[in-house]
Image 1 (tube, rainbow, N blue to C red):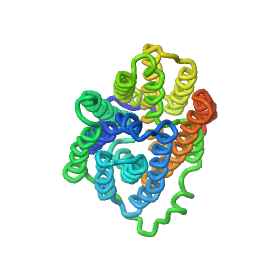
Image 2: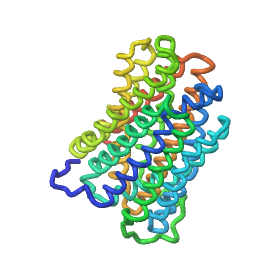
Image 3: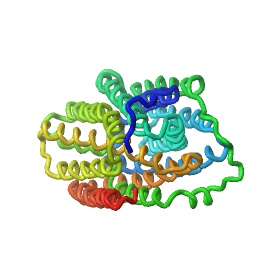
Image 4: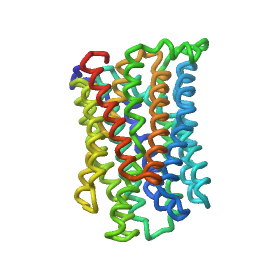
Length: 396
């Protein structure tokens, strides 16, 4: 699809949703950055971290499909977004946790709110711009989302060693409160006709076959696309024998910030490129970069420069994947089924996140670190091949 540079895409809703993503990610990435360090005080390692990430994503997936379908049915997105952002803002409760299972509960509840709002937000964003600007809209939203993911860990990094970790978690309540204000006073619903007789199974069955082919390729890739907090844990593990646990922890957070800076910087250019070129081929390239990154982590030693290169690749790949997966979905979905379609896509991604995070964490802890990366590299390579095949055969 070719897009016109004169297309008006930065609408009030695009800006409001981008700001929502910025402040929401600021809060939850602030907590994510210190989560491995805080978890270590309870004796939790890769397996526990993978369990927390995986179960949280699975719980998020439980509500994604139903809430997004429900937004199609009632013809309104904003009320669901208000509730979702309110619940997600509860991440600051980590400050009161005294064991890893309490952290699991808090993260799971917060991710349920995140799941309720995510696909609904994407549907509203796709409805707020012309079709030829989907790449730019999702790229800009992704850039702001990731800018928040840079600011949050920077705040954490500046405070680690100065404030107790529990007090750092409390700061996450501030951006959470800002998101609630944006939803209530800035965001606007796009008028849509309610569909009171819509049923979920019937709505899913009516989604285009091309869309389901697309989701299948995404699902294959997702089986190996583990949570990036495991990359931070791996970096800290590699650097600790050289620099000590405190310095390695700060360096791990710094690498995560660098990854997010690259992610933020690349998101809009990738989205704009997708409006002009073949989005599916671009997405397949993003999948392939993940495979390269995994293979790199198989051979990296204590070299900080090598880790910087690998986190750079991680930032580029996620910028491509995040922007293109959602922009392509908008191109494939009918307007009156956007909520259900984004919910189906998000649910498949959540299932993949659950499997990949738990399996990779288990392999790291009980077999070998290499086995976890081999598993991810093989499954994501199959996903990249599937996406490339669909593009070449014009399935998408």
